[in-house]
Length: 196
Image (tube, rainbow, N blue to C red; front, side):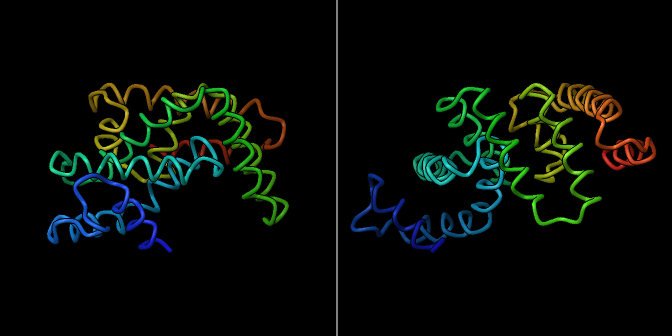
């Protein structure tokens, strides 16, 4: 299904003939698509929910095809930046916040009781942050990007990103300390140490 979706994108793009692009570019694009698609999709889901993820990912890779020669190595931070811009063009911050909370709740329904309580506390604390702070934490903690790569996604310097990330982490820890679902302060302290 992944590869067929890729070829659907190619068929819709100018400069292709019946879904066949220049062989080298097509091969390189296919490799990039296979390596990055799932992480771009997960990023979009984390920001806006599953209901628009496929559309945003398709548009992101359509832009990537049109600007293929401009994509730096590694491609993932650039693709995530494009996906971020597509999202900002299509939805408002409030819709992203509601969708993220719904998606995260759905992921915890089958967990054990303690894990559910802990994850709900993290979700509630995360949902209490503003969308920009939440995005910083998601890029580093869930997407696994380095601060330098995440700074490229956001469009700021690595130093600025680190300052913003530090502030977002402090706000998350403070929100978790005041959250009624998780009382033990040691877990909050451990979470903050894990992200340091």
